Structure formats: structure tokens, C-alpha cells
Length: 268
Image (cartoon, rainbow, N blue to C red; front, top):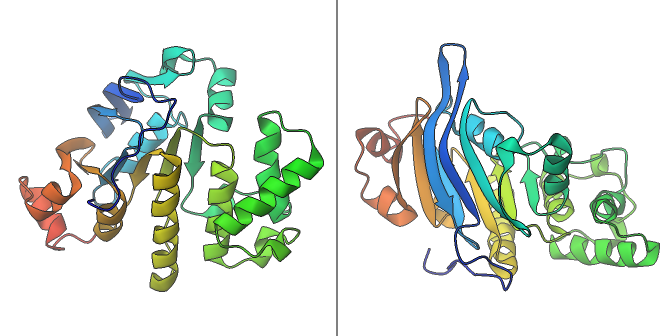
């Protein structure tokens, strides 16, 4: 990623922003993810790839607090110091999800209020962190619509009036408007036409770079991983089987499974 180096924001901690240790989740006898450990630094993008059923979505859900792991720690450098988010009370975790964390769903309908205007979707996130001045909220929402390439004249339109690509851009605006420090992305370009994907990827790369975001992105598309991720984790049967710099993993894969992924023998 020579043209998208990690950017460290002014408020970055000296150590990792996120430290994951021994994270595991089982569904009865089936492994969702097993003994996953890694560090994520401010401004860094980590890609998680693997075929369907490899455990990447389970891992992302455990990291984001949508699933409770059976074992392990997810230690986030909160503004008050490091905290294990697995042990947080649910209200604390929800507050974190409205402030320092954000989650971009594959289906934007899962991350938007479809009956609320575009501006209202962005404004709700601002109100969740204490904004109350209607004029300032609308001005910020208008600015963010422009940043994600949505015509400001459509601020009062409902998301259902938008195309799939526009809905995804609106979901991104809703998530990023409050300046989160860590963003989880689940197949953010999935289901979109190639030309729409390309525009969305350019948008994401610019926002990640300019805002200094730390990102964990799950994708089955190795081209997306190459464009966005600084580091890559390859998962199979719930376990990490290869981990390294993205170009290194994709250009010189060491694990036989990764070699199959890269050569497109496996359909992911």
C-alpha cells in the first residue's frame, strides 16, 4: 500500500489501539473462531479474508461486540485507558458503538433508518453524541453528504429513494460523521456493480487516509483487500493460518490454502 500509508492522528496512544488475545467462539461442536490474537495500530487497516464459513464474520462480530466470545480479550485503548470490551457492561459497549466505534454493514439497510431522511440519518448519529443545535446538525449533515458524493439537494430524501451505492455512501457518512477511532466493515462493496465498487473504494481510501482511521475489514474480494488493507489475516476453519503485510501475503503466500485463494482455485 505504497500510496496509502497509515496516518497517526494526534490523539493516538503510544501502543496499539486494539489488542486481541486468544479470542474464541464456538457454536456447539463447530468452531466459529479459535485462539485469534493480533494488535491493531492507529491509522492501520487490517483485512480479514477467507472463503465462506472460514470464521471471518464471526470474528468481526465478536470484535464489534455483536457476539459474546467464549474466551479471550478485546482490549481497546479508550480515552480513559485500556479496557477489555468483552467485560464491559452492555450500556458502556453501546456508548462505545456510538462514539469511538462504527460498523459499516454489507447491506446498508442494516445500518440506516430507511424511514428517516438522508440528513436525518446523519443527524441522528450527531445527536447520539450530544449535538442539539438543529442548524449546526443540518449544516454538518450537508457537508458529509458532499464528502460521500451525494447531492446536497437530496438531504431530505429517504434512503429507499437511493441506489444501492448511494445507500452505502450514506451509511458511511452516518458512521463517520462523529469521527470514530475504529471502524468495522463487513463486505462494504459486496453486491455492488464493478463501476460502483470502484467509486466506493476510492471514497473509502480517501476517508481512511484523511481521517486517520483504524479499520478492520472483512472481505471475500482479494482486490478490495489489496486496495484498502495494510495487513492481511487469512482464515480457514476459524483459525488464522497466515498473517502479514498485504502485498507480501498476496504476492508470496506461504500457506497452501492462501496459495489456492490467490490463484482463485477456491471460490470465495
